[in-house]
Length: 239
Image (cartoon, rainbow, N blue to C red; front, top):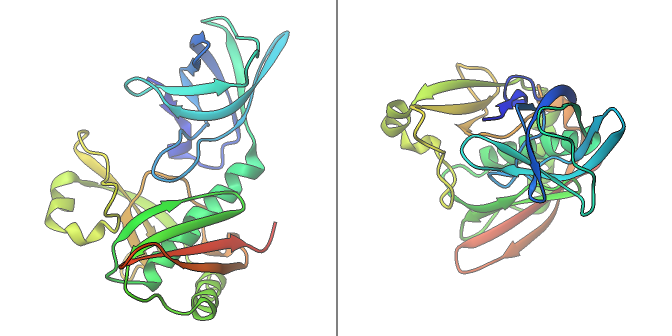
C-alpha cells in the first residue's frame, strides 16, 4: 500500500519516499503527498526527483489495493525499485483544487434537499449537477457563496462508523457516488462549528483549513441537463 500523507496533512507539498515498483503504467511509492483521482477531484501532478534523474507526474490515480500510481509523461526515466525519491506536488494546482472542493461543499449547503447527480473539480472551473427543477439565480448564489467564504468558517474532519452513517443516510448528498465502504468507518468533512455546521457530508478529498482561504468566487453558468438535472458552474476570481 501507499501511505496517503495528504489524508493527515493536505498542506504537505513534498515528501521523501521509497519506490515500491516502477513501469510503463507508472510508479508506486511507499508514501505519497499525491492525491489520486477520485470523487470528482483530479489526481495531483508534480515531480519525482532522485540523484541523477527526475520525471514529471502527469496524474496520480488509484492502483491495485491501497496503492497510489504516479503516471509519468511518455518516455520519462524510471527510478529503480527500492530507490529513494522526493515526491513534489504542483502545489499551486492542488491548492486551487482544495479551494474549489470546499466551494462546492458550500454550494451544497445553499441547495438543501436536492441530491447531487454529478460533479467535477477543476483548477479553473468546477461544477455540481443537482436533481432540481429550478435552481436559484446565479447572482443570489454568487452573493451567498461569497458571504459564507467571508465568514471564514473552519473546515475540519472526523470519522464515524459505517453503522452511524446507515442510521443517518441524509448525510450523503451524492446520488451517483456512494462513500467507500469496507473499512468500517467513513470520513466526514464539516464546514462551520460542530454544534451548527454549515455543511456536513462524507468526503475523501482535500480541503482548505477555513473558507476565507478560498477567496472570491463567481457562479458563471446555470445549465439544464435534463428534466430535473441542473448544472451549476463556479470559478475562482482570485489567485
